[in-house]
Length: 275
Image 1 (cartoon, helix red, strand yellow):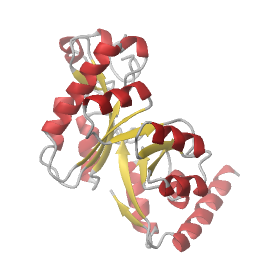
Image 2 (cartoon, one colour):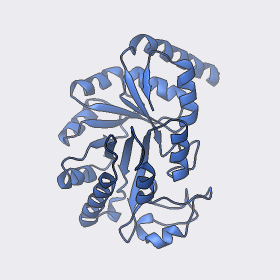
Image 3 (cartoon, one colour):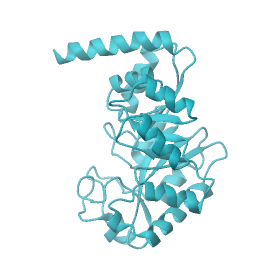
Image 4 (cartoon, rainbow, N blue to C red):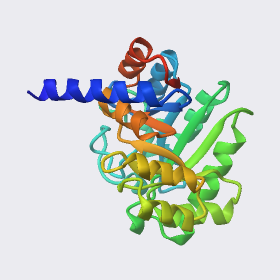
């Protein structure tokens, strides 16, 4: 019964946006390098997504005890690596002794920037992971934002679109204060609605990463009217992509980059999708 319902949803949304999306252009990017298909946030994952045609990526950055920037989503090392404890309480040398549970190297920001440095047409979201707040006091937060911005922008290809994102409004304000030209995106677990749009505008940010669940076409249209670009998440399935496209999103993340790209190339014609 569930598979029949999912098929109905896919067909209904597909028919709707085939009629509505003649001029719509969506940028799809690989979330953590495609965490449901590859070893998340590793160079191997980003390379695999790149090999199938993606030039859009999202990643997560944390700061070690000795001020190094490392590519990891969780503060605790246990879920994805052979280590345990908080990333922020380890030195770089300690992290370098670990590997992911799939046997890959844990990447640092300089590894990722080297990977990206010779590539064209990039769109990359650098998510600033600065929670729990107890691990990032004001001084540490300033050091984090400053080092992240300088490292990313020093290695930016001329045509790359690099965006600094966060759930943490403290971090967004800090980055804006230190580097006013930084392109920022506010992430929220809430839908794209009047409240999340107002919060985004109050921060002086024109990009919103909202939860696809509860988001409406009218909410996305309101964001566009206010000059805000909309990115929706999560991207766990083809159905999520279809829903995001129907809602009018400008950007969509995906955890299944290879599967989704193959589906799009086979099944959609009127919608312009950039990977």
